Amino acid sequence: MIYRLLCLILLILTVSCQTGPVPDATGVLWTRTAAEYTACGYQAYNAARVNLGAALADPSWTAALEQSGGYGDLPPAVIFDIDETVLDSSEFQGRRVLLGGAFSKSEWDRWGRLNRARSIAGAVDFIHFLQEQGVAVFFITNRSCQQRSGSASACPQEAETIENLRSLGIYGVTEDHLLLKHEVKEWGADKTSRRAAVARQYRVLMLFGDDLNDFIPGVRGGISPEERREKTGLYGDWWGCKWYVLPNPVYGSWRRALDKPVQQYLEADF
Ligand SMILES: [Mg+2]
Image 1 (cartoon, rainbow, N blue to C red):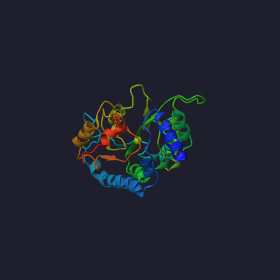
Image 2: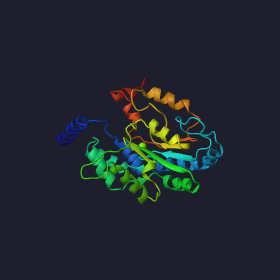
Image 3: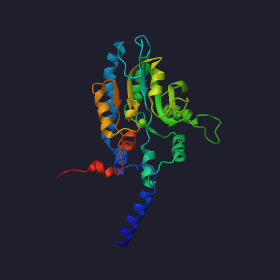
Image 4: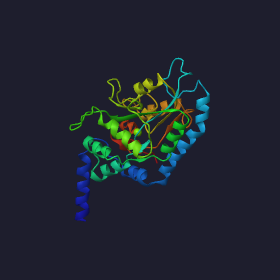
């Protein structure tokens, strides 16, 4: 009894010391172990493979809200997010749960340097398929481009991400096809400026991500869950056709959109 009480006190102290949302153990367990999560990856990438022909054949087809002007003759491209879209960072998230949750930039960097992220199911084969079809592949990630002590590179995260992709069999990714947060001054956490940069030179056929920010501008902050769902519904026909979302129950802008206490969203009338 005393042991249980001590454990409860320790748990409360641990949780109250966190600076950000604590990863939910159930969500991390699901992404670490569930075959259903694996199936979601195959489902998204198989559906995209079926739709690619129609996207290539129709010069008016674009998946980027930022695409404008006469884009019909531009070469085709597909844009991917990195984490929880192509690379699986659930090992890092699991460690956060075990250690008490707070996000540590230095720990994230240390894990990233290990190049041990697995791939999301279906992603590697689909990227190979695009490369065989002559479709350009871009990655827009909120992995941050920041100098690090002990590194001569201004953006060591870029080379590390390319190396992790290469370790999974994704070759030919050059630095100009991997757009990190803050790599250019105007490239903030909202990905719209980076999508616009790609869309100026390519016709964007499809977008892949695990966060609404991978698809729609202005959804990272200052917006309620209801407003985010409304924006999602405005493009109801695009999901599974031009846009492919991978599940992420662990973290993301959906989580930041919640007001505290989050228990308010769980209230029920019965
Ligand atoms: Mg992601």
